[in-house]
Image 1 (cartoon, rainbow, N blue to C red):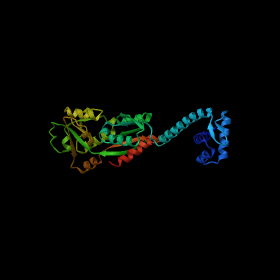
Image 2 (cartoon, one colour; image 1 turned 90 degrees about the vertical axis):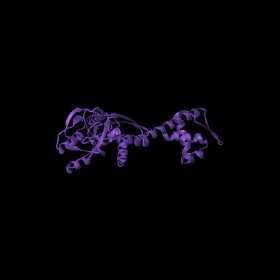
Image 3 (cartoon, rainbow, N blue to C red; image 1 turned 30 degrees about the vertical axis):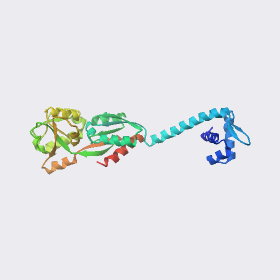
Image 4 (cartoon, one colour; image 1 turned 45 degrees about the vertical axis):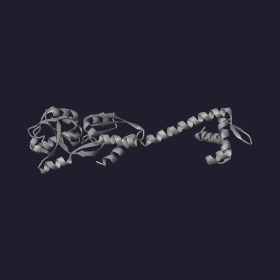
Amino acid sequence: MELRHLRYFVTLAEELHFGKAAERLHIAQPPLSQQIRQLEKELGFELFYRTKRNVRLTEAGQVFLGEVQQIMRQLQQAIQVGQQTSRGEIGQLVVGFVSSAAYNILPTILRTFRSQVPGVSIELHELTTDQQLEWLREGRMDVGFLRPPVEDNKFSCETIFQEPLMVALPEAHLLANQSDICWRSLANEPFILFPRILAPGLYDLIISLCQQAGFSPKVVQEAIQMQTIVSLVAAEMGIAIVPASLQNLQRIGVVYKTLQEPSSKVAFVADIGVAIAMIWRKNETSPTVLRLVEIVKQTAQQW
């Protein structure tokens, strides 16, 4: 028994006329009659009562029709699900992100993706850069948004967003009333920073900028999350160099100031800004993952 036999049967059951059914199926009438007889022989019971004047379903044919129609509906649904899966339109994704991404690119990415691919559910995990790399290696995550660079040729990595650095100051700080802060004016300030292992690219950039301004930062406190760092600034534990998008984290007792440096060398480095990159496995074949990557690349062009 082949699928076409069932399709022939359903069409004839709907038309109850061999000529009309054959026309709908785009085949000649004799082959249709032959295929129906073969199906009845294989099933072991008659599907139709045939006379010269009409064709009608037998009792067994009526019951068989209901079951076959259900099978055909399930088959159509299976085809649709398969097509959607092949286009990356259904499924589940596990996505990691550094905390600061929640204040710039992540909301836009999620809104855009959900509007275009509502059938895919996303499981979000706030992870540091090193944690995301570990999760990707272990297959626990599909796509990540982290701080570059990434020195692992197993992954594809693409920068999707860049922004300048700013200084977060306690509201009562002596420099809080200035519009722009010179890097050198921070030489004697206590710094709140994150451990280098969490995001070496951003950490090294901050240290390099301080050194180019003529000093090494005095780190008095370390914290893992940007929110914690900003909270410690509000508690007047020190100052922090943060991505500009952290301004979207409205924290009482903290002000954000633009950083400027008269040295052309430092200004050039600062102008490069701090980046967020999207990362995924190089050998990735999942249509759902590749669909997210495609949408993020398109969205990133707006930035």
